[in-house]
Length: 107
Image (cartoon, rainbow, N blue to C red; front, side):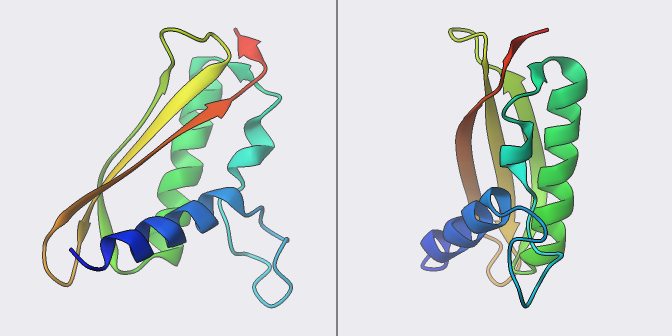
């Protein structure tokens, strides 16, 4: 779908922006970088998943989330892999955005 690069870019912006960082939209963002020094445990991964779901649902109306997974990286103990699957509302096309985030370590 033509929209996919634009949608993925908006999703990256949502995830990387900390709430309060944008002057005209202080509520904008998911603030994933706030989790960088947190332990890589189930609680932190659930908080990251919740932040992704809330941020993307609120700030990217062109998509409907179909799944969000936040899993420990099997090869690097301090990393989590975030996988976001969505459906584009306009045409029903599936899309995906993936990222790795380094946390403080295992827990």
